Length: 241
View 1 (cartoon, rainbow, N blue to C red):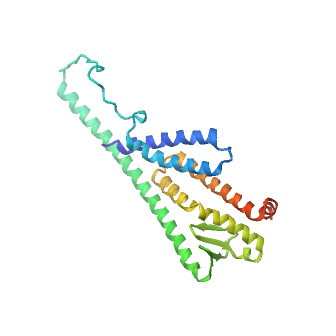
View 2: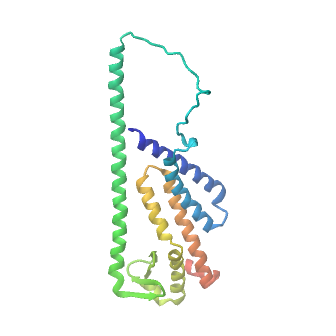
View 3: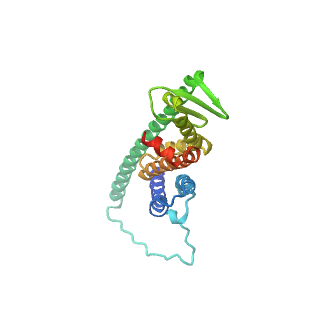
């Protein structure tokens, strides 16, 4: 069907918009970060899957039983019938071709963005491989010292810590606690899911908003873990230093 992709995209946008509106108006400031994280993830997955199910409230065609059907009189007009049919057929074909070109454009952009996400993952894996010679094993984690950046980050069990943090024990403990929380709660998997969702459905503004809120929620969860590790006052001093 010519309009199948466009119809699916419209439904995904509508469903994700509804979920995000609930989050923004009701859940955003409740302080339940773990629950909010699950809500944002389920909102994304549901928005992608619900339109495929063709539920009635999403616009699927409903079958009408015989007793409820109403017969309408058939009006026939044979004046210039063949000419009008030809014009209608040509007009319909042109419109369908235009919509097809639009769909091809949407698919092409999605494909390029998906390739960009894959390239980004490949670059991260390459950084892991290059950093392995200087790694430090800590329990099930692998800590890699990096230069030229002040920001710590993680990718699953691989944690990248700036080299200057190794000269400050409290700072190192805080960074490790923060990034360990990301690893323990599989935040990298969340990010990958949303990266692909926003790449495939790049036209959907609500997926981009959900991704932004999910990243913030990850940081709130990791901050809680850091406070438990070094204390609230010490963590506040590290943040402002």
